[in-house]
Length: 185
Length: 185
DNA sequence: TGTACATCAGTGAACGCGCGTTCACTGATGTAC
DNA sequence: TGTACATCAGTGAACGCGCGTTCACTGATGTAC
Image 1: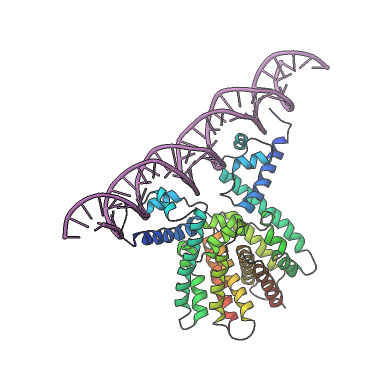
Image 2: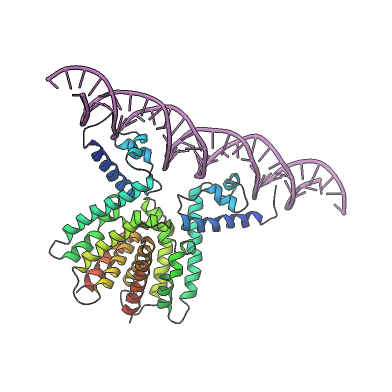
């Protein structure tokens, strides 16, 4: 059946949105197109009138996740103490337990990277964060310093999510937050 | 056919060793037991006379990877400038391109962690690194400082592997290495 | 305005494939006599 | 020492399942007259 004019575009975006959630939460490889389409009230066959392959959806979903995170981060960087606000949010309990709406660098980009097929979109997402951080830095070597800050944030969040001991996981976040906030003084 | 006395133990270890390589290189989910056994000249049916499930092998392989990395790191920490040697190796081109024999925290532990089923063995592996680092640190808060160093190392390596631009990837490693080595002065 | 037709988003069965796991079987070795 | 038997690591076919992808089809809508 043919639907009203922008119906297809809406469905297209719904698929991308749901994929960006599932890819981050469950992993790209572990996310099936059949369950994904079913969760949107669609059948799996229709997928290929929207995308030519799963890989194309992965790319679009990574972009969408990047865009979503970018707008969230834009709000954070508009606050009073931008870098501190960003750091606190990045290393928050919320971010630790919400990979599905969090930074895709730890989930999608790293899965693609470990596979040996990194996407240029990962570069775009990372660069966006680095530039936002640089905007808050005074002095020299702001690019280099932003890279170190971002590495530390990503590593702490990854380790926090990887560890079984809940208190240990919390401590990794707390200690790293303390360190990063103090080193800016 | 029944084999000589320690034949089974040897096969057992060969499976674990190969699994620890493949799980790190290809991912746990993307590694099939059938190809794994075939690469050792065995048939897949025999797998279950060694392990009760794939999950059990994952646990054993993570331990094995941790042990292997621990002994490599022990050598690094026995050198002249232990922390600098460790940092340089962790952020080396070799480590970036050799996930299969590198730190399992970025590969196996993070895959388990993102899945929401982190293994206590990840805690053991991380703690081993933290203690080795602490042994090189003077002054106060050595535990906290070791956590920050390790987070930064892990994050930089992850981002370096995730990024498509090769020069950008190298720069992440270089900048982070510089930063960590200078901050110890 | 009313009717005939073309479009095409979405349907649902089917494709080959690899997955983890099971199971009856094999046959060289270790053990018992 | 020689023979009969028990063991059990490894074999290979088979299980149900979900994967990504294909394809002939449907039928409500948009368009043309």
